[in-house]
Image (cartoon, rainbow, N blue to C red; front, side):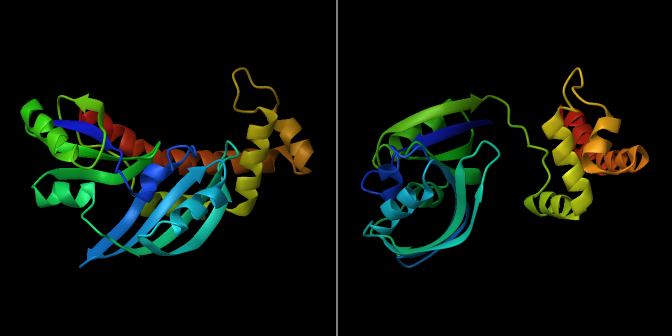
Length: 231
C-alpha cells in the first residue's frame, strides 16, 4: 500500500478562482444531497473579504455565512465559513469516492487546487486515479509515501479541550515569557525578570510555568510514545 497527495485544479469552480489570492483552506465538514451542498471551510489568506467576494459571486454558491474570524500567529487573516449551494456536476472528491478510491483526512485548498491524500494499492492505481481526475482539470502529485503509516495525532476535540483548560493567568504568563525570550536558547530573560514585569512574586511565576509545562507535557507525551511505538 502507498499514500499519495494529489491536487487537482477543478476548472470552472470557485476553488480554482482563488489561485491568485494566496489562500490555504481546509474543508472541515461537508454533505451532499441530490445537487445541494453544505460545507464548512476554514481559510487563511491575506484578505479574507476578497476571498468571500470571489466565493459569493460564483453561480454554484447560494450563501456564505462567516462563523468566526481571527488572526493567525504570523498575522494572516483567518476565518471559518459555512457554505450552501448547488452542484451542477460531481466534484473531484465525490467522483473519487464513487469510483472506489479512499481519500484520507480532510480536503485541502492550496493555490486554487483541491488536494486529497489517497490510500492506494500501488503506483498503477495512482496512475489510474490521475487519469480519472484529469477530466476535472490539471493534476499534480505533491507527495508519495511508499509505506502507509497512520498519523498519531490528538483529535480536534482533544486539542480544543487542552487549549480551553489553560487558565487566563497561565496563558498571560506564557505569552509574556515567549515575548521576552524566556524560551530562547540561551534565555534572554530570567524568571525573576518576568515576575517583575507581571508584578507577581518569583514563586508565583514559577508555579504558573510548572503547571503549564506539566499540563502540556502530560498531554503531548503519550502521543510521542505512540509515534515511537508505531515506527
